[in-house]
Image (cartoon, one colour):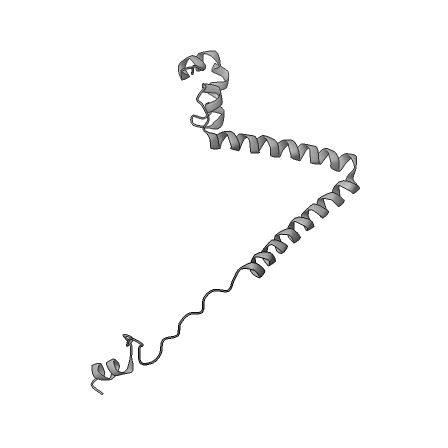
Length: 123
């Protein structure tokens, strides 16, 4: 597959190219530059979400009661599944190992201990 250079693409589509910002998705598509994998997935998600929105709007118009019932069921169900998953993770995760407490004989002196404060203040 050969790529066209931007100049020949502008000659072929002067009206489109004059109204497209350089570096935008539209200029990428119009000028013949390839899209990387992430951009392709982005375009697919964009188109799919617009199509689903249009289909959902049509369903709201055609059969509003059942559409709203299904929407509410899916929303509540998704929230409860997430809560169940959080509960499962909390129930099956072993507790962390307890921290070992420092005994007073092995504890290192801290920088703000009383003995240092007394010697510095002369008291």
